[in-house]
Each structure stands twice: as structure tokens, then as C-alpha cells.
Image (cartoon, rainbow, N blue to C red; front, side, top):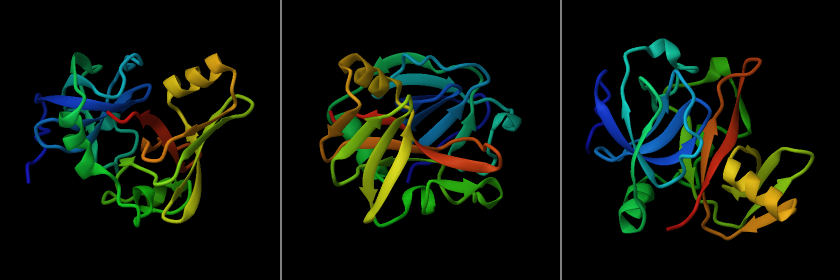
Length: 206
């Protein structure tokens, strides 16, 4: 099994699956590992799934908002766009990382976990493929994703700006995405002592 090389100064190439204000979630092309690169400055929100970016590992663990994240790395600046990938190459990278449906998302049931109960053997980000259609609703501003996982209903805040913009342009408050739609589920940094699960991105099938 190939190992992620994350020593300070190392430059990694990542296949982007999601972005946040100050982080980028992506698959390391060299090792196949799913990581979250936390940046000291804002990340370009024009990046989208299947973009390929370069990041350089920094030596500043104090930038991690949650030191229990086993998949987190600190990068020395925003990701730099270097290309795009789709088709079979992207599928081969994503397929082994899909979260097992018989395991709770991110290792625990429910939408939140107390910050003091976070464990470094539980991931903070995952690629999931709900077996049934994914329903998206927009009521009074926030966008919510409704889906089933392991036989349990899930309702998580959706932070995918492209999906929100699509609903706004269409004037709809409801959309149903086909079975097999892939999503990126991640833990937010703690708020009032709790970390919340969110859907950071919907990853279209290629």
C-alpha cells in the first residue's frame, strides 16, 4: 500500500473533490489517500471536483482547527490549479475510497459529535454513494441534503455552492438527484464545543 508523503516542503498533486473557505479536500495522486489541506488564506472557490491542484505541505500544525483529524495536512498557501481529470482515471481513484454503507458516516451516528470525543482513528472527510436518490431542499436560505445511509435517514446541511446556485437559478426549492450520486461528507470545525457533519460537495459521475 502506497504511503502519503506529507513531510514539510513536499509538493502534492490532489484530485479535488470539495473545497471550503480555507481548505481543500482531495485525493493524493501518488498514494490514493483522501486528505484535507488546510490553508492559512482563503481557497479559490472556483475550484471544483475533478480539478487537479498542487499544494505544498507546511510545518505549522497549529493551523489545524481540529487536531484529531487523521486526514488533515497544513499547506503553505492556497491550492494551485494544474489540470483536470475525468473518466476512468478519476473513477479508479475514487472507487476504493467510497465509504462502506454498513459503517456510520465518519464513524459515528447522528449529525454532531462533541469536540472532546473526537478520535484520531475516525476520518473527518469521506466520499459516500447513497444507494437511493438524494433529495435536496432549500427552505428559508439553507440547502439541506436528505438521504438514507445504513438504513437510517440523514439530513445534513449542504455547503456545495454550485448546487445552491443551480437551485436559485431554477427557482426551485426541491431537487432529486439520481441514485449513485456521490457526496463528500465532512466534519466542520467545532462550534460551541460540537463538530457538525455537512455535505461539502456533490461529485458528479464521470
